[in-house]
Amino acid sequence: MDTVSKIRAQLQETNLDALLVTSAANRRYVTGFPSSAGALFITRSRAVFMTDSRYIEAAQRAVKSAEVRPVTAKDTYSSHIKQIMEEENVAAVGFEEESMTYSEYQTWTQKIGDVLRPAQKILTNLRAAKSREELGALRAAQTIAEEAFYSILPMISTKITERELATELIYRLLRCGADDISFEPIVVSGIRSSMPHGVPGDDRIQKGFLTIDFGAKKNGWCSDTTRTLCVGEPTKEMRKVYDTVLSAQKAGIAAARAGIPGCDVDAAARRVIEAAGYGDYFGHGFGHGLGLDVHEGPNLSPSNKEPLPVGAVVSAEPGIYIPGRFGVRIEDVLYLTEDGCENITTLPKHLVIV
Image 1 (cartoon, rainbow, N blue to C red):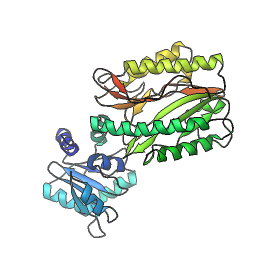
Image 2 (cartoon, rainbow, N blue to C red):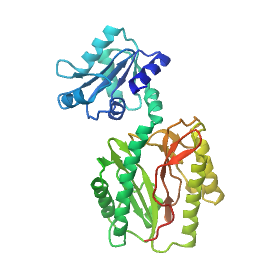
Image 3 (tube, rainbow, N blue to C red):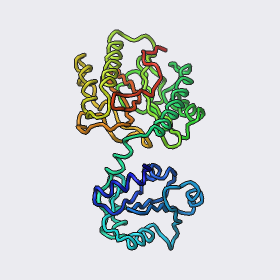
């Protein structure tokens, strides 16, 4: 069943007559076509993709799952949609309440009427379960990221800055075939490695732990990987913390499978960290969904009691962060099946000392 058909089936279940898709990621998910402007309107019998002159020719060639209409000063998004609503007697329209701003909501309501109803969950749930084809696209992005990571290893030393290493990593990601980066790389060293989302600084890389969190984007699909290395010899405690994080990740991966709540996977890893005495220093969840966005559903956090879907692609990234001293995070990406999971990350996880 194609994506438009899946959405129509959801419309039936939610008593909606149509779905308005305005966010760039969801437009791309449904149509396969990337653009900075556009709207997709799906009813129980029609699907219409609208965009302006910058994209119309390319959209007419690429979009196969919907009728493509040009938007002009006269034939606006709202005029196209109002026409379809009148022709099909549409009274309730789902919209993406998590991505549409309040101002945008007001504008749409003024133009097409008080018909918008929250329906983000339709797209969130569909995107959470990846097909094998989508998994292949995610693997391609992961392969690029790993090639780039290997290429920067010889550059790591106390002679370059965190920002210089991050800049070089971005360059290598693009040179290895990425269309873009999934996010700005996190490169933090020494005592700064205790900041999970620290920003690369202008000081030279410090001795101690060096955390590198990075991702490649290919054909819209994102990778996300973290490795923590050590610049110089680690202390006994540093080795203990690293081994604890690695053991926690392995425990979470062993527990990860479709059909169980995300909180159960998180708990399997968290127990290892708590038993080692570092429970207060693991402040985030075990993982998050990954796809066209680097962070999407489902979450593997203590608060997620919902069963994980078959085909979910999620990160596995426990960490220990001791403020003012150091931090460690190790992150892989998993594909969930009914029987367990497939790890699509191939980088080694032993502590690399440079």
